[in-house]
Length: 387
Image (cartoon, rainbow, N blue to C red; front, side, top):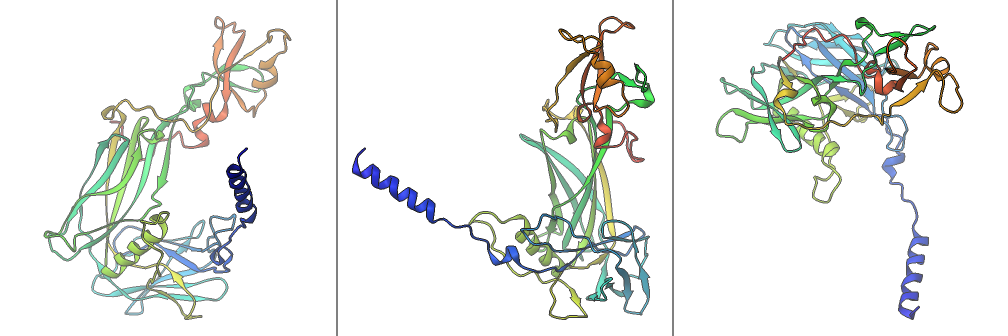
């Protein structure tokens, strides 16, 4: 080996041996700040406020909900509208139908005796959604929203959404055990067709402030990959639109840059996020969130797989079919009696082997590959329709 190669090799060893792990102070920061999510819905629909606290980057807990708090919407006329705690840090009120001529704030009292107040905000009247549509792209479906304000009062918008989709298990199970024997599966026992839902986890914003017309055209809402199980059969999305003040829009835009657009040298750099919620107990304590007050408009659209290209969706589990016999080859062990007949078995019969009704065994697969109810519900939502 030449001296040059030996020298290079020794330099690599030195560099590797000198590397030390670096844990930035923020990773171990003891910050446990209150996070307030949601808007005050001034109309007939419910108001949902979610409370949580930040967790350290190094923490294994991704969620830290705030429980047993007391929350109320307060008006500038000293009227109070309490919210009721439900689950996982969510606090809900039925339709408030607030007077649009007054301002409102959110009053939060946590179980440890701390109090937080948002600034008083005016009621914004959200224009209707003109339409929700979609564009078929090479790698999936882009869902968009169109809207405009004929009164030229609203220039800033926020959207959230709820997705619902119909999907199938990988294999259709024709049989079921009754604890004594394998019997044909009845129609009311079908576990192959289910419905699942998910809510938005990204910040979706739009503005017409710098446009010549007060029109939002094909503002992206979400993108569904072509391989997603959501597009396997029928897909529906409910888009909810609410108006924002300029301050609220800038807060969420800054938050979006800090949380969703970091990772390369070309992305926006982290910056301070100043909301409109403050700690009364400790004015120096940071609080993350911005409470707006507005009516909410919504529109639902259905997308059928029939109108999409012949994409191949990716099933979320690795699935295999295995034959189980009453008399296994070579050993003659009764795998049907041992694995399939006991109630609570993790192996599900798929189809019969041999001539009915005298089957010599059954093809089988695992629960995730045959039972869609582990990820969804058999009963369709009340709003569901077949296209």
